[in-house]
Amino acid sequence: MEDRRSVPICPEGEPDMAIKLINIGFGNIVSANRIISIVSPESAPIKRIIQEARDRHMLIDATYGRRTRAVIITDSDHVILSAVQPETVAHRLSAKDDDHDE
Image (cartoon, rainbow, N blue to C red; front, side):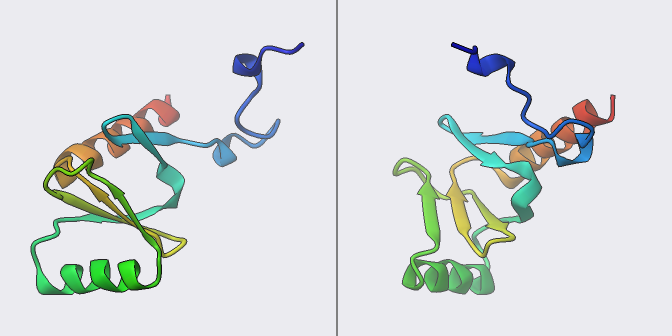
């Protein structure tokens, strides 16, 4: 049986299509390619986006009951709540981009 760890995560000859994953806290992983924005949950418009996502069943709560510190909006209209600061998530995202450039 083939070892799954050795299977490439991008199609051959398509390095731009590689799946980049980012840790958003507590072992939760999100596809970095799908992230549109990372924002703070404090403003009224963001709170409205969160409530609308909850009503549409498109909200993913990855806070494990802790305070929401970052709201991640994806290209699939999912809204993800994270207990990690937006700056931390953005730093992890930019670190993944730096790794890809090398």
